[in-house]
Amino acid sequence: MFLAAPTDTTVHGSVSPGFERVRDVFVENFAKRHERGGACCAYYKGRKVVDLWGGVRNTVTGDPWEADTMVLVYSATKGLAAIFFHRCCLISLVSAIAFLLGFERDNERDAGGFPPLWQSRPKRPRSLSSSGVPASRGCARAA
Image 1 (cartoon, helix red, strand yellow):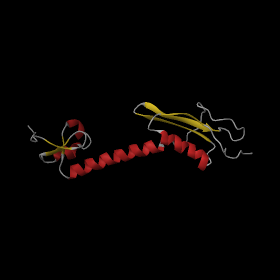
Image 2: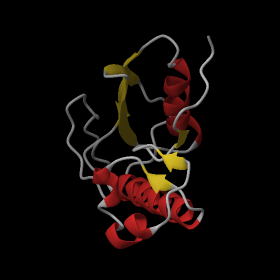
Image 3: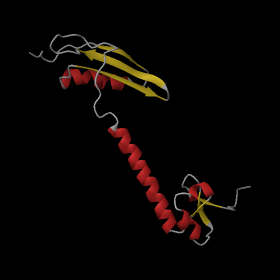
Image 4: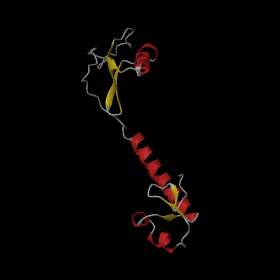
């Protein structure tokens, strides 16, 4: 037997100034999307800016969701893994394009990825910094 979604759910916790919209959307999940219980915690620049919880944690018993309610997390790392993979692919793509365009690496450490190729290319005045950003030696500097 399941309980119906609560019609008047109290949301507990706090939000920092500037993050009130998160609380509004969290409350909206209960009011419009029939959420039964949940929590949301977010950090910004190392500081906790959102810490909210509300509803019920067990639809059979009606036990309330509390600040320390434990939950199972499924597929939480897929998003982070996708971002990491995308970034690695992008860096490899930029390096490959730079190589094909004749850019050379600024330091020996970076040459480790493509030893025979980077070292066998003719020297050109263009180069890549270790961060992969185009750089030029001997640029005129503003006085």
